[in-house]
Image: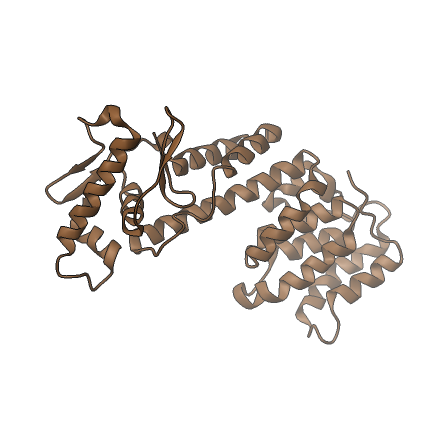
Length: 316
């Protein structure tokens, strides 16, 4: 059997290839809370708060028992061979749901992300394929379709962060395997959905540069910088990437370009051969960032640079 929470919570009978729907929002919330603490007893008081908040009804415990019975029935329907050894058992303090990590779509996803992270540098092709499969497990937002108590809300936040990290690794793997053009639409979508995730903007800038669209990469910088600076006070990845663009750094086309800490090494590197005109822009970028954007934008400055055909951004 598989417990599915990367979307609307449901049970899936793998032997008979059928979904077992849960009959109520409270039942789905109960499943999420129990899976968040899988294989450990969850106190009844915590489950009551999870399902009804700080002001539960007078007979909340009785109603909780009814929801537990309904969930047990659904579990038995999905896995009739375990009717005499139920997964959902009562303890003195609460209830415990037995589930291996590999029986949960969230567990399968996290295991795949860990594997891809280890493979990304040495075998980016396999990492890319692994993450495409893992991200296919998502059917919507985690625990979709109802309100969340504190336990479920924490689980949703953790899984969403894991999903965004998976996307970062996926895009790194794609850039390492020459898929920069393919991922541009996806990066445009995720930067719109997560405008404060600096890494996505940085990866979009790199993908655009490698696709011969350097001017658009600079546009990504100018749009993202204002919002990110207002939120975080600085944009280290984007500023370093802009400097690489301004001096035509070979790093833009090397395998190390996808590694975040590679951006910080640019200051120690001499300008590329024949880059007499670009030693000054590298330092001017920093000065411009400190000026009033209304006085002179980075876009305007680099447009002048581009007009002299200083920036060569042919695809690789």
